[in-house]
Length: 508
Image (cartoon, rainbow, N blue to C red; front, top):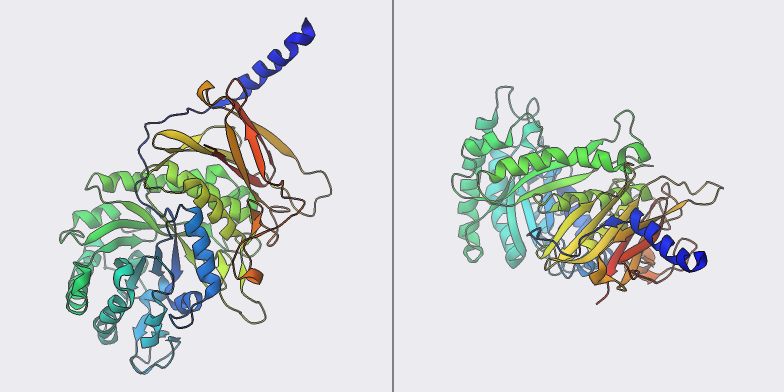
C-alpha cells in the first residue's frame, strides 16, 4: 500500500515546492519592438560598421543573430556618446575620423565626409544619430549645419530619430559655466534642434518632421531633473519622440565592485533600475511617449577587465534586460559599445595584437533576445523563486498566454574550482491546462562565471573564427538539445547549474 502511495506523495512534495506561474496574464505588452538594442560610441562607429562598399561582416552577422532571436526585429542602433559631443566636422579630412583637424585646432575628435559612409551597412536596421551640443562655438555651429544634410542623406529610410547632446548634465565645469542650469540646457536644446529641423527638412524633406530622443541625462539621479526639463518646455515643439536617460550600475574603478556582489546580483540590478521606474512614471504623467534607457552597460568608464568581459557579465546582461522589461515602463535598452572596452558585446577590429572577438556580454544579449522576442506583443512578469539575490526568474506571455520561462542561477562558480559544479532544480506549477506540455530548454552556459571564452547559448557559439555565424559546439557544459515535460499535475521542473541560465519555450 505504502509503495503504491509513494509516487503520489512525491508528486505532492514537488507540487508544494513548485512556484505557481499563471498560464495566462492580462499584463499589457511592452510596446516597442527590438527591446535589446545597441548604442555605439560615435568615434568608433566606422570600426564597428565598415562602409557600404566594405561592411564589417563580423558585426553584420552578430547583429543579424540578435535580430533573428528577437523575432526578426533588428536592434535599433544609437550612434552617440561622449565623443559625439566632441566631434567637429572637417570637409577636407580624408579619413572617417581623426584626433585633430584644420577645422578646429582645439578639436580632439574630428569626422570627415567618409564617416557617413558607415551608415546603412547594417541591414534592416534603424539608427539614431547624435549631434554635438557641447561645442557652442563657431566650429560647433558649422558642424551642425554641415553634418545634418550628410547624416540624413546617408541614413535615409533607416532613420529612427535624432539626438542632440549626450549627458549634458555633466557639461558643468567642462563646457559650460557653473550657473548653467536645466533651464539653460532647455533653451540651448530648443534653439539647436530648431536649426537642425531646418537643415534636415531642407536636405531630406521626404523624412518628415525630425524627432529626437531626449534629454539623455547621465542618470535619473543627475543634477539636472528630467521632469523639470519637460516642465521648462523641452518638448514644447513636440519634437521629442522618446524620453531617454542613461544607466550604469557603478564605475569600473569604484571600490568594492565584485562579480558576485555587483553584477551577478539580482538585488543590485533591481536597485539600479528603481530610479528609472520612478522616472518613467513621473515622465509618463506628462505624456505617453515611450521611456527608454538610451545608453546603458555594467560599469561606466568602458567596464572593468575581469568583470565586464566575463561570463558573469553575460548573466548580468540577461538579468538586467529581463528585469527592465518586467517593469513594463522601460520600453527599450540601448547597450553601449566602444571598441576595446571590456563591457562591449564584441571587438570589431584588430587592436594591437588582439584580433576581433566576441565577448561574453554578447551571449547574454542573445539569451535575452530569445526570451523577449517580439516585445511589441510580449508581456514579461518577474517570478519570485528565492530569497537569494543570486537567483531570478521571469515569465513571458504572448497574446496573454504563457510562452516562455527564464531561470538564472547566478551563484558564482569559477572554472578553476576542483569540486563538482553545484546545480539546483527549479519547479513551476504552470497549471493543469498545461499538464503534459513540452518545453524546449536553451542554456546560457560556460565553464565558469570567471571565463572570457567558451561561452554558448543553446549550444551555439558565435565567434570571429566563423565571422559571427553560429556553429554547434559539443562541450562538457552543453547539456545537448533538451525537452522537458510538465507533469500530470502541471509541474514543470528544470535543473540549472551554478553560473548558468535557461530559457524554456513552450512547444506548440
